[in-house]
Figure 1: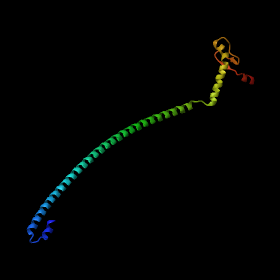
Figure 2 (figure 1 turned 60 degrees about the vertical axis):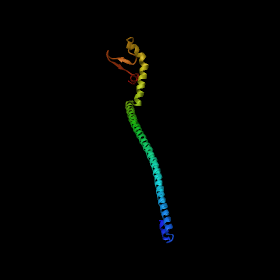
Figure 3 (figure 1 turned 30 degrees about the vertical axis):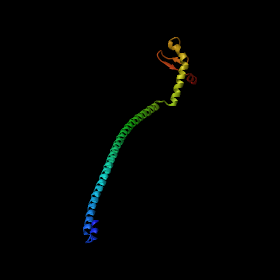
Length: 171
């Protein structure tokens, strides 16, 4: 492109010199073009090398990220398994505790039903206290060493009736 303006300005007399100049310029421009091509080629080569390095970096980063992702997923799966096992164990423990509480509640309700009325308990206590007081009187009779204690009448040989002193005084 540079050679064309030179051709326009050529003079007839200097035609031979100008042709030589033109030839030199063309050769130089071809060299420059070759050199430019070489420059472009070396530039492309440098870009190619740079892109290859960048590609390797990206691949190594990808590999690292894949490993991290696999590790994360494995840890997540392990954690989920552990949490599931812990939840199952807690569920079983809670069910066992609930069963124990229900059984204890049932036993307490049964015990409440079995407990006698407080008046009955008081009468029973008084009864056993009177037995304890009258036991020495009856011991001799039961051993066959004495007769029936005072307050009891012998009606028949096999049957005995109990006379209370209060009843005797009311008659």
